[in-house]
Image 1: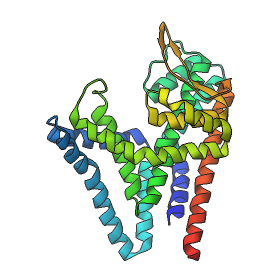
Image 2: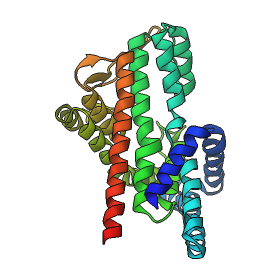
Image 3: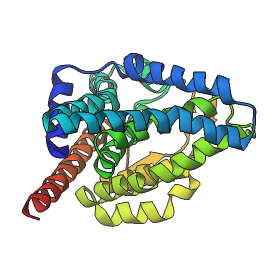
Image 4: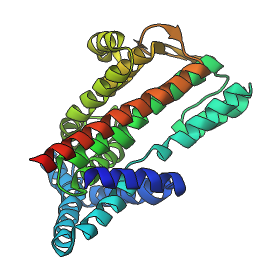
Length: 307
């Protein structure tokens, strides 16, 4: 059933892309803000209780609905799986921006590429060169493929029905919303959301990095994975970016010159500087990793049937 649900979601997404920001990110962000406004008294225990209401309660309710529908007919359970997966994962959450940036760079339209990158990642792109745009785009695509595809897929397989997919998406949104304006502040309320998401994302990060290494340059990916993530601001996400960069044989990270400002960033990967051709290689890497995951799901399903 898991494999059928995933195939159905991939097909539906190609036919009818989802406006993720409007339909998912904003409503779930509003839900996270509502819970925070009711529970945030600054204490750690309040953060634990709020997280349970914001994340575990919806997941438990969806789990009960899935069990009831599956008891009526497995087809109903399959339909709920497809619906929740369609809302929580997908390539089109980032591929549209990425493809448009790639096309603009091939046409030599740097201004258009800067504008698209700024819209996608919400960062300043003033006077960025094509190499900087390519690097930032590849980093964004590798991170988004993990956040929107591979991590959701793994949790979908680990927990019954659509519970895992919803758990990952809600936990990520809650962590980001509760910590968005408090990066430099000590706030015990937000601490639990960071801790629990670190636990939830521990296995998916390494599974995604392993998939990139398997379908790319394994030796360089493994070397970059071992040696480079500690220098990245988000060490956990640095695992995926370092492994992906090593698998592609491309230099990511590195300082980015934005007008007169220089952002000091650690170097990730090995090999040649990023360019538009490496952007196309990154697309191939993500798709090959997806095929590996689908093949693994097929083999697991086959083994279950034989058993």
